Length: 296
Length: 253
Ligand SMILES: Nc1ncnc2c1ncn2[C@@H]1O[C@H](COP(=O)(O)OP(=O)(O)OP(=O)(O)O)[C@@H](O)[C@H]1O
Ligand SMILES: [Mg+2]
Image (cartoon, rainbow over all chains, first blue to last red; front, side):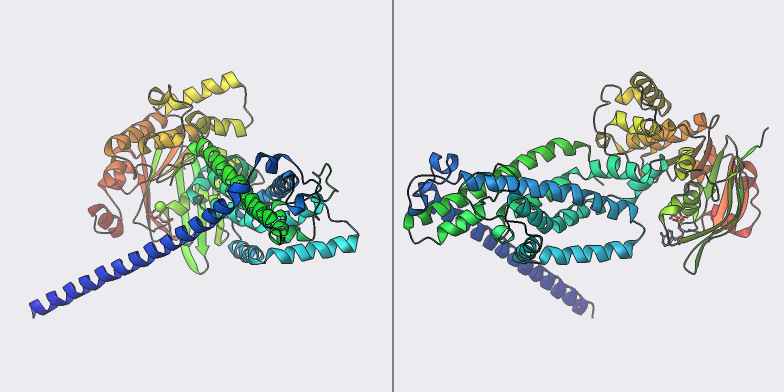
């Protein structure tokens, strides 16, 4: 009798062990798959893009014969994209930060409402950017505004606003109740709790949120397709149209001329590098500023 | 003079939905003494503490009625700002929650939000309160370090210093030593004995021996009600009810 039960438990142990192996295998496999695909994308961009990458590419605007594979570069698109992404991220940040603080400090006792808001924001996050683009375009026609940097910035800001709010919100959610109660018991008002305590505690999460939004803003083509227009010049005012890197890639890729096609990959290398540089930079900055964050 | 009352709780009721958490609480807490609140887990000790500095405001599901008088001001129904009420009490919680900033700024925080910002005075005050919490000697060379770099015991003393810095006259301590090693616990106990000359201290603890060591006055709670209260000596030597006796024997918990 006793032996029998021993046997049973050892069977169970065996099963648990195999289960463990199985799930570990699945996880390993999917991680490898993701790493492989990422590697493949970067590899193909580099192989095709680096040969046609040149100093000229990043320091000059397109000249007369650029679209036939002649001289010139894509400085217009680089600058345009940077203006657009910084502008949109800035606007989304100054609107999104107060909203997420409001959700977590002032509305903290209205859990139901906040969760509903989160749900709506997640829905908005999931809407394809082309819809934002079309929406922006419709409004622009209605108001009689021409495609411009400003219009692109506004539409892109709308696109990344849900990402910004929810990503900051996820950080703020992790602030323990005990820390909030401690700062209230020192006589903090709600805004002191929000701006002096919660913000500091969540700096890493906020940097991540900004980064995520920036990456989406600079990489998105559909939101700016109708709203910013396209030009060979570097914009000098908000009401001028502007080129962007994703669209530059798109237009060059659709050219039948091989030299121009290759330049599309060079532009992709540039776009990827910008995102990479920004990521590394912000990681370094977080390291520097999160030393006061309390680990709970 | 001897037994002046600092806090008077009158028919305090607190419920969440249909569940009664605190049932008709009536207690008087003597001024500049250590009052220990005892009782088995879940009997409402922390909730009673929270209602004293109105942290219950943060829980909209809690329905509170009754009166809590502090120096004759009914803090549950006062027109005064709730932040002013909270500043009159320093809070120590079960585990320390230092603010996400440097050691220095943790102590300076309360002074700053109260509007006292003169740099030199601030330095002096910070030193003073760190001294009071017996932390100064350990941190005087590293005031700019993050508070999170301190040990848990040091963090708890930092929280004490930070609480004292807003110049309260009451200290609310909810199991302040439960996360600490015996040495750090003793330091906190010793500190309380020194501080009680100037502060009214309310301490929740599960450690009966700790209670016996430092309590002047004891409140014993059970299932949301106050079963017994009185001077510590009488409470421990001559408990009145069967429940209290059982608790002191250690057969409830
Ligand atoms: N926010 C809340 N929502 C629902 N119930 C709560 C809430 N806070 C406290 N309670 C309930 O109120 C009762 C008293 O809780 P309280 O934390 O005051 O007990 P306690 O005496 O401090 O216990 P312990 O010694 O374990 O800390 C418990 O039954 C608890 O479940
Ligand atoms: Mg408790």
